[in-house]
Image (cartoon, rainbow, N blue to C red; front, side, top):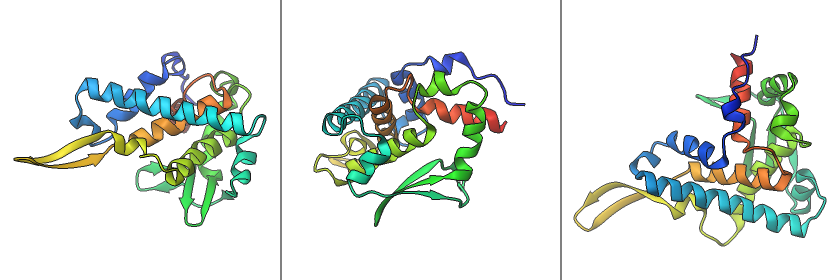
Length: 203
């Protein structure tokens, strides 16, 4: 039997969820708390601002319709969603550009949402809408001229005198993609909560 979904997760702010996500990034731990908060705020703003621009350009369009307008096909994939320890719901592949939805990856999430969680977590959106939107953001960040948010905030891996070896924070891209989906679809909460729902269902 699936566990009850914790209300504190469903009602957590995007900032709180973003910081939780950031703590899972190996390199983000090298940033101090103030830098982490600033990075999360930047990622959330980038996702929301990008979504607002897209909504103005494509009013009333679904995420799938927007993707098609950009020439990005959306494909269903029955392959194994598990890669190492990573469970995939969806994936953006740049060559050629396309969005894959993993049917077996989405199955436990759909099961969890069938227990009455769909409306509190998704509003009127579908899981496919959410993950198409999420992956479409990755297409936009890969093709636009602006510096990706994951590279705007960098952690120092090694410092020798004046020489610094820095790296970007990949998780910021995921935080921004979730914010994009939330703003585009008017979701009640950041889509990160769907990960928790799926895990509880599987447990």
